Length: 301
Length: 238
Ligand SMILES: Nc1ncnc2c1ncn2[C@@H]1O[C@H](COP(=O)(O)OP(=O)(O)OP(=O)(O)O)[C@@H](O)[C@H]1O
Ligand SMILES: [Mg+2]
Image 1 (cartoon, chains in turn purple, brown):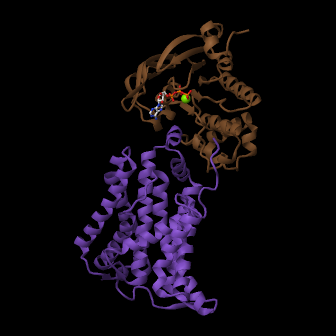
Image 2 (tube, chains in turn cyan, purple):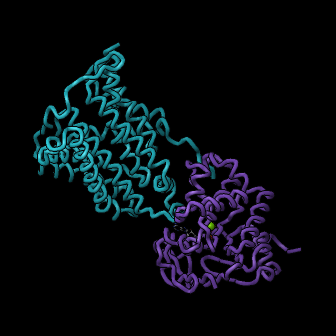
Image 3 (tube, chains in turn orange, purple):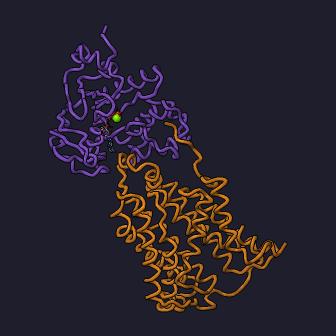
């Protein structure tokens, strides 16, 4: 039972990361009907920027570990948001009215560009986050000893998701984002500046991905320039699982995938950890291509 | 004169859809645009809203050019459209759709007042305010599309085939509503397949054929025009 609970909570923590990244895929898909293949690399950039800022600014020493990490995360979120904004301006906007394939090629190109840029700036070898930033303690939850960082990671992911849900579902600009995802022309008729909405989405998605990057760095300690590929693919699976374009779907899909993967690795075989995700992807594409929460309403004509 | 189109040309790629049309709308009028499928009626409305751009010619509102204004700024000038096919935001609620109609307004009280009189106009929408727009019936969606367009306090309302696919009783109710909102001082351009009803409601009418305006006259005159009767009113008038 203890083992099960450990695996479950680990799955939820990792699933929170998948969910944060999946939100970027799903929101961009929502407004542009495009898979942003460079999204995983924005997550990687977040992890590397986090490390650089951590070691160069020494915030955790000057203002304490918790405040320091918080300030650091905010900085990373803003910086990666800016990178996302520029990515859309440079790689996608000029191709807005071109055939779909051009944008897909551009997305793949942007991914290759980012990976190489990260490698040139930070090197090809893995880097490690400093140890002992957060006290290495465990917390007793329902009789199980859980690492503090695991709990923090899950709580922060959930808070970020709640914040995003509030933004997209309870505010005017959020409603405008969802409207632009449904029908850009009709959104313009409402007075919504669709280009601004798209820019905003390309800042929010990468910002969440960047935050996930920092958390992965802190959780696993080690980062490398190709890490965005596997995380990106899993988050993409999570987005499809929840129903691509659907914001609550991406959250659910991420958490679910994290749990399934973690339990599968524990009770089937650790070697199957990554294969399980792709098995899930294949199954969902066959059985329910719209995902768990996709296409709830059929459009009446 | 509220609105004037001068020698308006619109292209889709290399194909010209409007070949230089002239059209005027006076304050307080209901003007109808008739024409067969593909004549260019929706294109005309969409060019006024900035969704498609004029390749030549001008669109003037109160004498000032608006054809270079981006689509999302048109509604602030007092023009709004209930588009062909309704295009309600299907996965948003009725209430959210209505609020998006007032996206350019910031005065919360004004938004609330607008909502109140529009729900008054379409009580059915009030009953269904929490429901997803995609689950409404066709007629309800049409009401929502019109109500949503009214939420921005427009001076000029463009209606693209509001009666399409509706039962006759609903058509009558939609046309009554158009008359009602016109009485409140709103100027209306009405594109319709239902030519007889449209001409009865309108002050003036334009007839389009393959990207040109071929006839423009008072609605009554058009109603009794034998060519119009045979082409758009299903045979001889009575
Ligand atoms: N997005 C588009 N791309 C290319 N051609 C278009 C587009 N929209 C309209 N057209 C063409 O422009 C012409 C006018 O179309 P429009 O939709 O304005 O006609 P309409 O009078 O509204 O017809 P209907 O009664 O069927 O709604 C048609 O030949 C149509 O095929
Ligand atoms: Mg049309």
